[in-house]
Amino acid sequence: MDSLINRRILLIDDTPAIHEDFRKILTPQTDNAGLDDLEAQLFGAPTRSRQQPFELDSAYGGEEGLNKVTQALAQQRPYALAFVDMRMPQGWDGVQTIERLWQADPRLQVVVCTAYSDYSWEDLLERLQGHDRLLILKKPFDNIEVQQMASTLTSKWEMTARALLQMHHLEDLVARRTADLERAGTALQQEIDERKQLENQLVQSEKLASLGQLAAGVAHEINNPIGFVASNLGSLGGYLQQIGQMLSAYRQSEEAIAAPEVRKRLQSLRESIDLDFLQEDIPLLIKESREGIGRVEQIVKDLKNFSRVDSDQQWQLADLQQGIDSTLNIVANEIKYKADLVKDFHELPPIECLPSQLNQVVMNLVVNAAQAIGPERGTITLRNGVDGEHVWLEVSDTGCGIDAQHLQKIFDPFFTTKPVGKGTGLGLSLSYGIVKKHGGQISVRSQPGVGSTFRVELPIRQVPQAAAGEVD
Ligand SMILES: Nc1ncnc2c1ncn2[C@@H]1O[C@H](COP(=O)(O)OP(=O)(O)O)[C@@H](O)[C@H]1O
Ligand SMILES: [Mg+2]
Image (cartoon, rainbow, N blue to C red; front, side, top):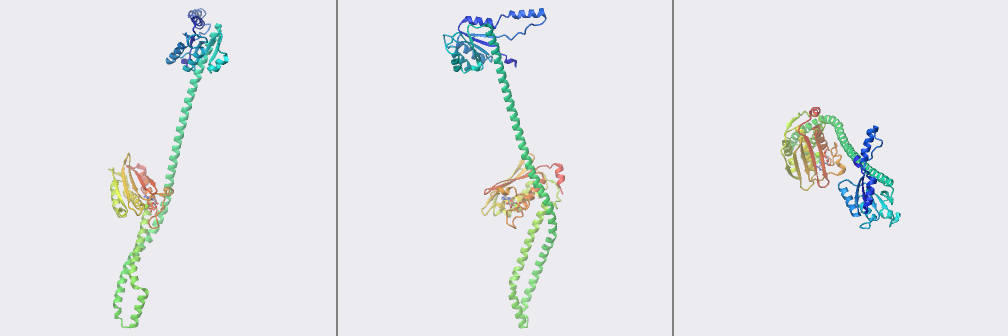
């Protein structure tokens, strides 16, 4: 703060004698200092504290004064105070000079010295607009008045400078605090967002877990009856075929029946039940029933997978690319009439996973992509790659896209927009469960009418406890 002490004074006056007077008043001879020292030696302590001396510069006209002020500013040694003579016949008068000085250095305190004035004091103030930095000193002046003005106004300069510095300091502080607050606010918002996301994931996992248990029970219950219905349908088909053969044999021997009324009765009975049609239709009915049961079996299998009841698989290091390729082979038929397949594959490291479950994820995504494509032929694009500790797979389609209102629900079990018989609504929730089990992420970007992209990210290595805990 001491650097703010400023005792520099500039006197602007065209009369050299005035400069002499000021010098005597403001910078008395330094032998005083010697006297003080002597006094201190004699009496043991200084009798008065020595004030910082004034530093007085002289200019003999307004222009010269302005030069000194600008130079001093450039050297970062500004004047605190200027005494300016009002009447200077050559060049600028006092008022003009003061105007210029303040343009250069608005902080400068000014005393205007005048015997008689060309301006009234009111005019002067009006014109200079510097009421708070301007004092008037009437000639002839009193020494003590000059000294007091110099002391008071240089101190005023210092105090103003200090206040300004303090203000900057405060502004700085406020700016820093505001920035801190803003940072804290952003961090908080980030945390809230993360929590919300975690909460969503948790809700999703909870839903899956409770549904998993339910599904496991249902799958188990349905599995038996379905098993015997399927096998009975198989036997029934065989039996009916044999009966059909028998009926044909009877029919051939019909002519050999001697009693005409018996023959006639047989014939009219055959016509009334339309035996020909029955023989044609029965195998079709059996076939359809078997297909229906096949579909139910598939659903039960999905349910079981979904609830992980029979996941006796082992975690192993496997080639995900191989899984993708073989899965694509299996679903090739589903795709080939609907879409062109574009593959943008990169070399993947082996990853620690349950390979057949991941195949199912791929299968679900590709089948969904194919099903999203309408009557017009589309494109399904598969991309994969490595990103740090993860591998990723994206399945994009040029299909119908997903409505915003459905986006939140597509991973829910049994959510489907497909007609009964075509969609179970289990594919994505199953896939979600599998990907989570691998410690990965599944996400979707979609634009209705344009297409969708599903992205799966999987860690290359499992964190030990996650892997161990999740294997059923
Ligand atoms: N690639 C896709 N394009 C458009 N919609 C999709 C796509 N994948 C999934 N969906 C939507 O998500 C729903 C749920 O999918 P999923 O769980 O696989 O069940 P499902 O296919 O049996 O309906 C679908 O019914 C469909 O509305
Ligand atoms: Mg599906």
